[in-house]
Amino acid sequence: MYIIIEGVDTSGKSTQIELLKKRFKDAIFTKEPGGTKLGSEIREILLNKNIKSSKAEFFLFLADRAEHFKEVIRPNLSKLIISDRGFISGIAYAMSRGLDIELDEMIKLNKLALNSTLPDLVILLKIDKESIIKRLNKKSHDNIEKRGIEYLLSVQKNMQNILKRLDINFVEIDASKDIMEIYKIILENIK
Image (cartoon, rainbow, N blue to C red; front, side, top):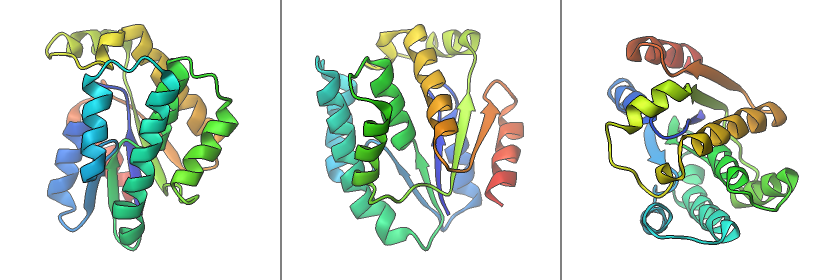
């Protein structure tokens, strides 16, 4: 299976992925952006440089995605692959940034980067506004988080809309639940 765990910053993706690493020791764990050498450089640019153009940001995500697919996803399709983020969040962040490209076109460009290989399952960790505020106050902020809580909520809403539009399996989990309860739901859906 090829699984993507999606969610905005502070939704608990990293915590769940660490738990899954202990359970699925033979799985391929990766992330977007940053799952390859080039991806790490692109991730650094996306998180720490002041990118003025929403199109430039979108194309950086696409460049990372194409490289990631070629180096990580395609060679491991016969294994369990669990990715921290993927094309759903790439499109959602672009939409929230006001990118003036139609959603269908963004989907086509992402399918091009992925050779039309979509995940078998997407797990969306949905978080409420109060939890985002509480969790953001406990950490320093990168350029994406500095865009604010309303921006993150907009990204999350876009993720939900994109998942409903695409013909892929997904499950939405309330990220305010207990960590182990979320983990149990994720395991049930992977099985």
